[in-house]
Length: 384
Image (cartoon, rainbow, N blue to C red):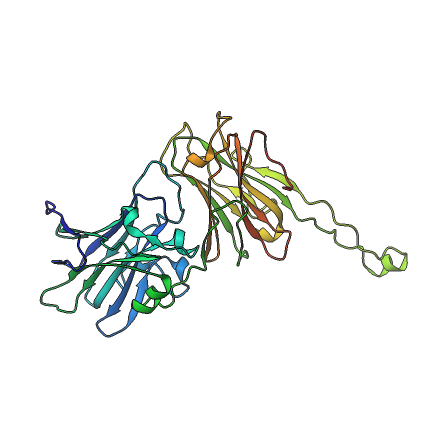
């Protein structure tokens, strides 16, 4: 079926009938911010709910297509607040299979980059738009017309209260603070930023709230360079078993034996480590070989963070001793439980190695620290 000519709703209050309820919603933007597509709804029976990244609330998830609410988010393209200097387009999509039970649906873009720092932004500066495409090829683009500042932009509202005329798409063009969003939109009251964190600047840190399972660190980059993910680690010292029994005390050996020094090591593409045994650190693959650009990704998993004393997550670049890592559109994303912590790769001082982030487990809880430090020689632990 040939696509119909697209329709643009550029003014607040403009509206358009949609002929079918099976829709694909795409949020696209070029600015260097982390926007997240969300949907908030009220059903015809009066129930409310939301579809967004589960990192924003323990009470909501990315939805489902084969069960209510019959809508589902795609990949979170803005998990990383990527510092792209090339103006590349970012996209997030929401699939809607049916709207039979939905009376009104709000399509929202959350600016996580600024909301996490309690800043307000003018969304008109982000070159963002929402496109709604129906199964029959009908396409409607909603452009944000508001110059107001806030943390979230309500791009559009789909009204479906009249079964005879079908869904009607409205240009809402409202920009709200996070508190106003929670108060005004159905299903938004439980929205939270607590689980998704951005460590934007050197020295920024955040605790790992739940490190009981596997913690994963992902290095992502798009530039046409061959980055290699490394981890340098030191395990906590272990005391030998025994040494405190009856006969030991009887013959004057009752003091516990001193702890052995913790094991130190290095995990990288030639020595991938192990997850279920020491060092409890494992690298999955080598990407970007031959300076291949695109959606490159390498992952390191930590099986037992409680056994770590300290670890640094490092990028090395092949055959470029004076690399500028901050220009490679890269970030490290750490995931633990329901928590996600991003450390963007920002350091532009030349070097072959860049220490991006540190897992410091020398205190009461494991802490992630933004380091972003380049050097010409291989890093060593401990960091000062």
